Length: 310
Length: 310
Image (cartoon, rainbow over all chains, first blue to last red; front, side, top):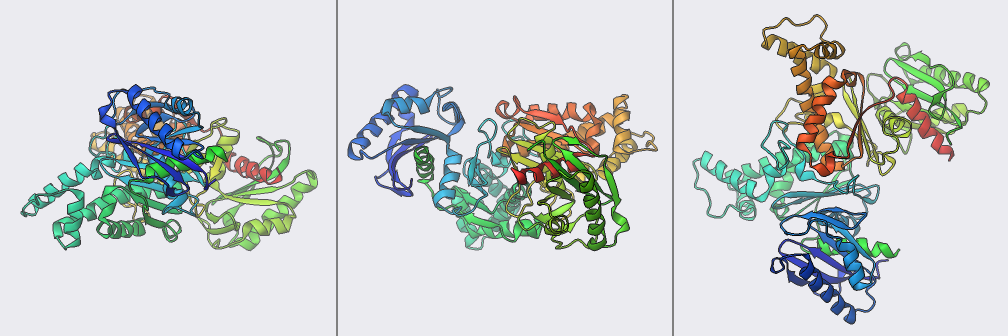
């Protein structure tokens, strides 16, 4: 029910963002709670619950609460396994704690799945039945919409695009998974690769080798930066090509900081996919920029929570 | 309806196999029509339709007909795009022709999807909601059961596991898709790799380097053959690892000729997946031998056709 008011919570390693949401619109500003000021779940949950309580006084129509969390969860039980960059969050039954403290129906989902669902429901992926969402940042995350539904997998762990291999004999991934994509195109790896290319070319390494600046340099015609993004496109393209041969989606939605590189990444990426896919898989494939940035987690968690009320 | 009688047809490059099926049981022998004796669709369709007609005289309860075909199709329209190893089959509306000629509800599906569905419905994948099926032979094929349904994708082209890349800088695949799995572990590639390993080891190359014989040699302790299968396990394992990180399935079902290698392939494959997957994805994962061989196509196409009657 898209005219229902729901509280969306995006639990991140830096801050927990909270807002009241109606459909795809935030009806309040985003309130931020500093995650790292709390040493464990108890005090942080208390502060979040207080914030929810305060919002409900102003928005008594709020009918559910959705929480996106940065890590592995048991979706059916509503329990966190462990959260990336947040200590002390193993086996916390966060969904039911929130439901109990607020008296509202609550839903908890992995943050990458929330982002994917937001793009599918209200963003770039709207109207497509099978959508692969990729988030490029410190790591590489993903979420899948298949046959019009968020696809979670057997242990709710599906969508780990960053752990897929692009080289069976490649660099070590975090789980011994050689050639893991995120070990090639995570933020840090892009900066390292850039430094390597500048040195190799006998050129001065720019003072700022953040992906953002490297994208600007490529946009201005810097040949080393252009080469860098062409190679990032091959790494990302190889993994997406495999994903497309497996899932034959209608659309690929690409978001996250690195996606802001824009055409310097997207043009060689589309070219790569055109060269390596059958016409059947490529011709009608949509390769899209994510619509939402910071608000994707809140919009996705609130959209999923709203469906509890259907 | 599993007590419904249905005609299952498995259209292959060598022969078209036809049988009456009830649930998972063939109620007739398998009748074979020589595919290559017919130069085009018209005469072959005629012979298939005649066979169906004759079977219906003996089995008047037959209520539907299912056809598995070796290649790309438009499932919604029931049209073949083009079939592998069979000439003259572009854009043939085979499903509707069969429905018209027989007066029965008809369904047409890709053969790899039929095999996957047979394994899910009656075979090794029974009882699992998310199943990845792989067929190892001349090429490498696949089919996906996701959330308890055959997953077809946007253009009904999903499941092309053999076209997924295991090396972004690897050998040329058929569509420019470098590192395509089937260019590493197709039957012919396994034989070539074996010849290479025997030569490299200074050992005599066996007269028979078929995958079947190479599996027997490994079973008898031949160190070169053992090394071969360990490497096949790495290639296959790398692709399955990526597939599992993406889809987090309950089960992987492996069939086709090469799968008969048995433990010489399965033991190092399980070891590889144990090493490279998170416990979350691996611990409850079932890695299974396909139950059906030659009958998988007939059982799958008839099972899908039977569901037309539900």
